[in-house]
Image (cartoon, rainbow, N blue to C red; front, side):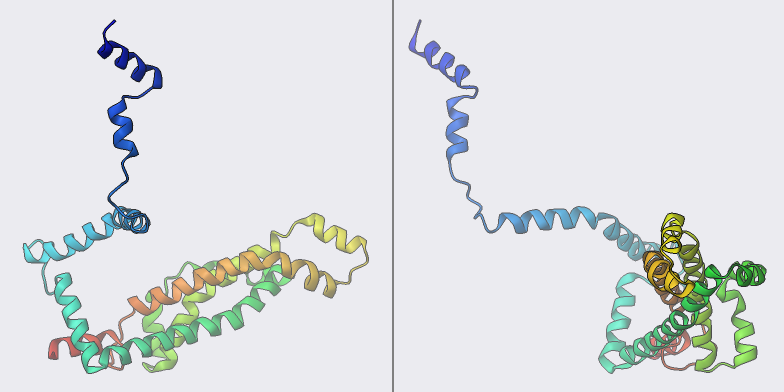
Length: 252
């Protein structure tokens, strides 16, 4: 048997060729502290493919004439107009005014609706009394009631904040009622067996067991506040309104 055949048999016995082993033994030219950053950039690029594709479609569709640029300007023009508004300081005023309305309505809804939901869920008679009203109102879109809010409350800040409160009320109310009704009956029976009063039962059993679902309602209500803030259009050009922003963009 020749020496070449012996070398081949030894390589096969070791499980990999000697040339491959020597290549693996050579140190990598990429520094070790750079590898985590490269992996992170690769993962970020993979996750951002859909966003990049949507932004590219947004940019290309108006320029190719597929969509009227009056209704949907290219993404680059939107960014340029936003930068111009930021340079003159108007963008910050508009965003601050809108955020103040959304945050005010959200906090008012949390303070008012969470206790109401606890009461409706805990007292069956109150729930039966308000059930029909809740079912009617919760299926009405907030934007559909915009003329009603303007007619009753005017076009000032009161109607805008009230609309945000209405939009946040139903996720908060329904989740709070469901949280109270879904408490484990075994916990309630155990507390009553140990002589807990109704106040103690509510404070030490019902309320702690309901908190996770109540916080789910708060999270959904915050999304509703942002949705209501971004979708509503007001007829008076005040800071933060859609007309004010579009007028400033046209003027610039």
